[in-house]
Image (cartoon, rainbow, N blue to C red; front, side, top):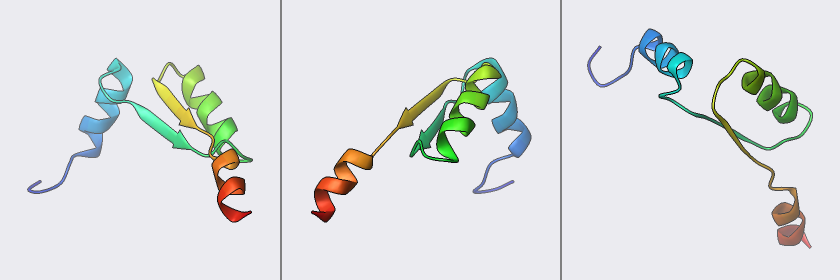
Length: 58
């Protein structure tokens, strides 16, 4: 596939720890998603931006 990626290549990279997952926002969806991905032995990084959002809106 020219100019793109193969989903199977991405999935294999995730399985062996070559690829990493980043979850931005740890609310109702993000936190359970990050936890479940980590339970499946994926490398997961996460960011919770609530503090910065509230400071910007005040």
